[in-house]
Length: 377
Image (cartoon, rainbow, N blue to C red):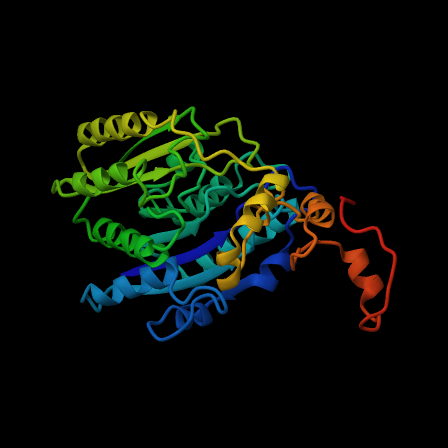
């Protein structure tokens, strides 16, 4: 029994003027074929310099733990780019072509697992991940189970749900259950491929983008919801529950939180639990994040925290230009505030400016140059 697996993941910021290209995948993580299988071993590192065990490692190692030598994990490819602007149209087309080519290479399969992000954008495509799923479905046919995993910040859509037999997502924020998410997907896929379970899915979309307080899974606002999800899975017919709290920087008409329930052939139970999980998520819609500080107030607090500064550093994030969510990282407002109000503080301010980098590349240490820094895109 051949269960094949792949990843194509990137979190896109619709408002960035910089498109994501194939070079961004190649420069971050792009592995194909048997090299991918080797990277997912227990003693290997799936994503060098980043994660030892992520979703694909969890998937492969769960198959190995199942104890059935007839079940084999067949690698396709894994492409992962850091958050950035939407994919260039030709990049999406090339990745989709590679994915389908690998499927054809391995021949008929008994199941497919795809690790996606859920917030990928692309130039000219309203829902690029749905395109990838439809391409896989067209290649393997309607009878082959297809299980998909997403980031907790995925944007679920009707098209994504319709193309998959089951959807699972991270349950931690900040994310630390990559491998366990892949293992959950493996258990569903093994059961479906063997005919032991009938994957039955229900989902709800909520008109909610900011809620749940900090949305941290272990803090009071969200902790009861994730605890209830685990308790609901104790019912024998319930296979998996997921809650996605959407990526805020995607220009999507279906923007909002989403919930998914997977049961073993019980559609009524899936619908009932999807309703209940959606109600629990909706109940925290009015719990807002802590207020954002101005740079002036942030610097005042930093100066007051002298003992903490003796022990470490203060980290300031510009939430209007946060590179962890795909922004360009060239806003100079933090630097400007530091120059005006940060006298006496030592500050390291990362700014994206290729032209200044080139201009100063060969400059001697200690030399002085006048440049216009940042704010050019």
